[in-house]
Length: 171
Image 1 (tube, rainbow, N blue to C red):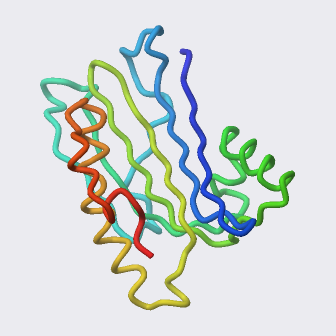
Image 2 (image 1 turned 135 degrees about the vertical axis):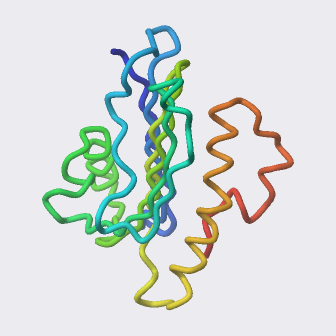
């Protein structure tokens, strides 16, 4: 199945402050069928996770969930070492002299229905060690941001919903 991959990076002072990896089927391909890239959201080391109820009995292709996970970017099993698209993007950043934090927090969002699927991985620096309130702020932000990804998938997201502060991760 042909897929589209978008990897965006936010860089400030030669340091990565955010990475966004979005993968979805090509609109020209056949989106029906199992979403090959969807991963479970209830992983053991998740800070938080939520599965949005879907009528899987009526529609087995319906699935939506998110998780917030600490990531050791150097660990052998981390997405930074196993995901081909992320590996390529991180390599390009290193080639440009951009430093990538060793510890990040990942928002993993997965959505599928009979029309297609979407996999989003948003990585931001893990500030919990420096700022004790950072984890709480990030979790509150994720709980407000995940519904925007849902609306974007459904093509019902309005410009007014992208209020300043919500479309940006918490400082």
